[in-house]
View 1 (cartoon, one colour):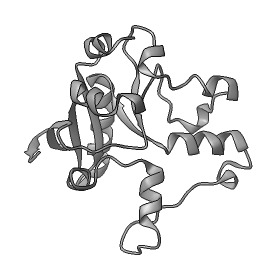
View 2 (view 1 turned 180 degrees about the horizontal axis):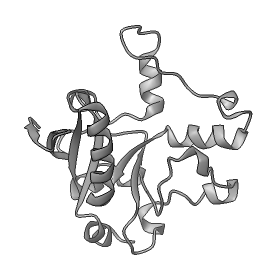
View 3 (view 1 turned 90 degrees about the vertical axis):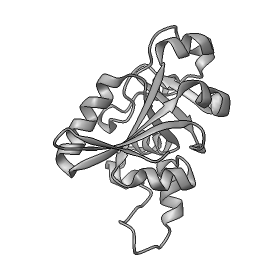
Length: 181
């Protein structure tokens, strides 16, 4: 897929996060789970974060490696419908969620070499792919077919400045507030 084809399939990109996360992302950038765990260290004022290990998966080495790979990425929705589904679920469960809308062009300009696309939802641990398939789960834009990806990922995170074009806080009752970008 070319960058122009990617922009055609993904004219907008979305990130959904717990309420209050936008302020942290605006200040520190989009961080991966692995980076958040490392940054948390022994800070007892935060909820506990820890790196999962093979014992967490009943000794399944493949599952542990898969989660380790997943934790090195920031995930973005490539289309609105799956984002809306997740937003509804978590806004109802937690009362509200932050939704960040990103400029596709600005993201390409800033982090294209670190971007990888997936044709399916990669985060479900119960669907750990076989090692030979895991290598092809995430593909650079140039190797991805000309179709809408299910996920857009950025390896090792990225700075949000100039890339997030709108931020909203969505509530369980359906209303939302526009946040300062």
